[in-house]
Length: 466
Image (cartoon, rainbow, N blue to C red):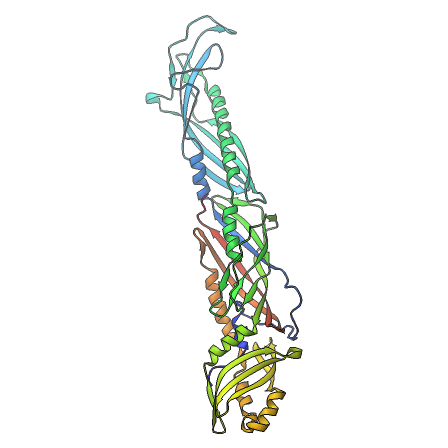
């Protein structure tokens, strides 16, 4: 029987954690308390180029006075004009919780004048004069907006868009006497930029990130298969987020998740829950996770039978085959092992022992392994050759397992899982650093291991669209 007979092989397979095992409490007792809340704080970096593309589309390319190109705008009795303004590409910069959006505009003007006294005209309008037309080339002006933003608890953006004053690069003079009407045109452009700014503010206010966060939330509530030995569900309860901080085309924030992860040998039914509203917190990083691995005896027995696969061994020239193994809980933290055998002796006999966890050495073991009292009596009467303790010695060799090396393999696999895409446009990087196994508990229906793990996790949002 070269396969290790061990209820413990499940226990060392369960935690997807580990680099260092620290000595902690090894008391065997029922698990009756509530699992402490786990906190995972994740720095997130968001590429803002997608948002910039949206703004590029939302800001109009061309502005003009009412009636262009045939109707004039008359500011007073003596002057009338029309203008056309075309913007260049947006220049976007971000710092802290504000973003500046600037662009160079190109404008042309047609104007005419007449003599007036107050509101009374004394002459007809002069022929049209132009500025920025034909060989002159369009006149240039710098305009833009500054936006302050924050994320509301309901995942919408709160934005305040302020128009920056239009600054003419080129002056505009018209008619043979060189009247400068740049100031009047800048006033008209500022008015239209105010209207555009309100449109940008409305666009930002309509952005709703809840669908993206709902996808992430549902991923956290999904059940994950743990390398063919069990199932994990993170079971988040709260979600928090820091203030938004931007630099150039990148947005930085921290997301915190609090929950009570659960591991089970049986498949866990996925639960659909709505992502809760956000709460603020100071940016942090790293995670500290408490995790219970609940191992029911029926599932443990099935796995053990797969491992045994009708193993045979010989005692005093008598060969027996283990047909079936069943685990059950006994009193005072003892674990029972029912072995159904065939061959030189057929029937069922029982062992009992105490599951122990040596956190200093990383050894999982069944201490005090012996025949159950009822089995002792049967063996004495019917098969004393089995009672010579040799079988116990043989079994003892397979009820010990050093978990440190195996956990390092698990840590490597888990780290690979942390460094991959989640959904399109979102990827993670991270590292599981260390783990402490806090305790082993034996209950009536299941065995439980409680672990505490720490490490780092980062999220990169490369391409979000709305």
